[in-house]
Image (cartoon, rainbow, N blue to C red):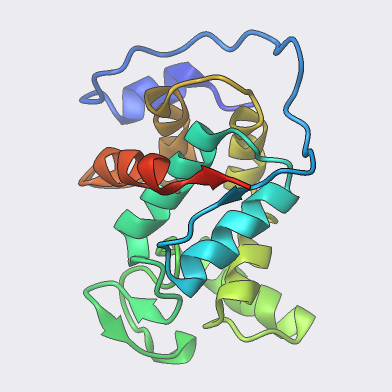
Length: 184
């Protein structure tokens, strides 16, 4: 579980106070209905479906993850920080991919994961599969399975997952996704 005191010290300008995580009365369960985003692009839809297969079914949690990925990469999996669209091996500085893996451990971890699984480190599928193996995601995912929380709640913990330098339009994008999601 993410230590909220650590996050507050790292991200002191975030205006939402640390939430108290109470044990949920009932964890979300996947039923026959899923969230869809008819106006989303292919990579957004793949990500939305992928998250739901992980048991993340709260629309606010889903919108928050989507908003963060949009801020990081605009769902372009072969993007190097600064906007250059290149293969994984041609990104020489900054972050790379969907969530802009930047630190050497995370960046090279993506390459090792792709090599070990026979995947392409520039593909959305490999990046989504790698994302869920990371400690940062493993700390964040249980938070996303708490139902009935706000975007601010999920956004607060997203910092521990991504460690962003700039908040940017993450929350704005999350609310836009919330408006786009429909239950089918």
